[in-house]
Structures are given as C-alpha cells and as structure tokens.
Image 1 (cartoon, rainbow, N blue to C red):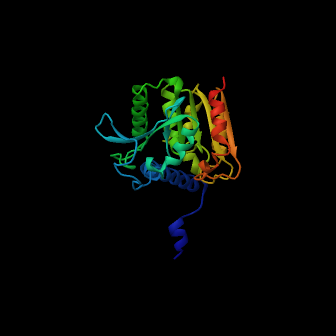
Image 2 (cartoon, rainbow, N blue to C red):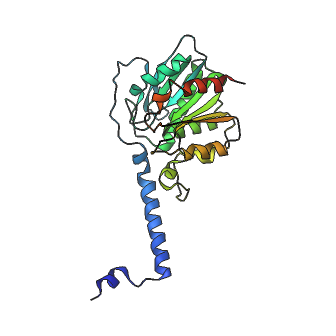
Image 3 (spheres, rainbow, N blue to C red):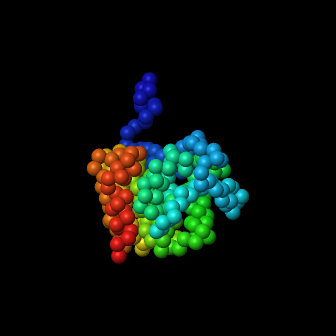
Length: 267
C-alpha cells in the first residue's frame, strides 16, 4: 500500500491552493484567538500598595487601574507613559528620574492584569484605560499643550491610539512597531491586526519623536522607519547605535533625552 499517496494524495495545483488557504485560515484563527495572550504575557507585580505615588482609577466597568505619578516642582510638562509588556509601574523609577531631570513629571498606568491593576488586558480596554489616565491628567490641571504621550514597545500601540483621539504637545514612541502582527510577518497579510500604528499614524497631526535601537532584534528599526514615512507632520527619528529592545533607556543619559527635550521645545 502506498501510504504516502494515501496521506498526501495526488499533488496538483488545486490541492496546493486548497492546502495554502487552509494553512492561512488556521494561522489567522490562531492569531485571532491567542494574539492578546502573546501580546500581554503574565507578569507578576513588582510592587505593593506602599509604593510612592500610587493611585487607583476606576474604569467605567468598575475595574481598578493602578497608576503612579512622579511629579517635579519645576515641571514644564507631564509625560503620560505606557510601558512594555514585561514591565509594570514598579520598574519605572529610573525612567521617571531621567525625565524628571529634564523637568517632565511622569504619569504611568499598568495594563489590566499587570501590577495591581485588576482584570485581563485586551487591546480595546487598554485604549479605554489610557483615555481614563489622560482625562485624569486633565483633571489635575494639565492642558494638551503641556501634555506629552509616550509609549515604549507595546505601549507604542496604546500611545498612538491615545494621540489619535486627543490633543497633545507631542507623541513619543520608543522602539515602536508598525503593528503587532507585522512583528512576525513583516507585511500586513493577516486580518484582525492588533495595535495597528501604521494605519493610524498618518492621521495624527501632532509632532512625532521616535527612538529606536539599531540592534533591536525584537522589533527591528524598519518598523519605526515605516511610521516616520507615513507621518505627515513634524517628526524626527533618532537611531541609537548598538541599542537593543530592552536596554534602550540605558542610552538615554548620553543622548536622546536631551534630543527629545530640544525637539519638544523648539518651535
């Protein structure tokens, strides 16, 4: 008995086409079901309720969202910060200090399921919770002209959506992707893409400042080049030679924080 023929069948263009479509549909279904679990891996909290600057905001559905505020007296603006998917607000002291030194206060939130935030993270509820934090900043007295929106890695998706829907002095993206699926496929071949920055960036009129490491093997720098190419307003991209994905803030002291400050402040 020819088991190979029995299992595989007779090779033909029709069979090859059907097999290709079947594999594509299976990959699409897998991505649709499991994407958010891969985008937001489990992350045990690095802090407790005694951490300085902690405040809980309540979402419309009753979920408690953990935020943290690092304020400086001589501030010139507030940075609303959205972190990467392996971090929480307990990991941001060094980043906040660097921004504080340039006279920027920092307000950050944890996605649902991260830190002490309740619930489970999904693309849509991160957008809703980001809006909650933006509105809270406005309640504190910050105006759009002295509010900056910053997103690192997966936070670039949250930050980009927030900047699309609200006024801000500048959108700052650190190691951003064009979209989450394109991190794996490079091209937009799959439907139901998540955090599609590329589709949104051309409709964002605010100034855009991007920082990317040349040795970023998680989200390669071509992602941010695509975003710059599509953005129609004032923009600048800074490439950090030798920087990867998770160590890029280590390069901030010498370079890009001051470049960011100059970009934001210049007319």
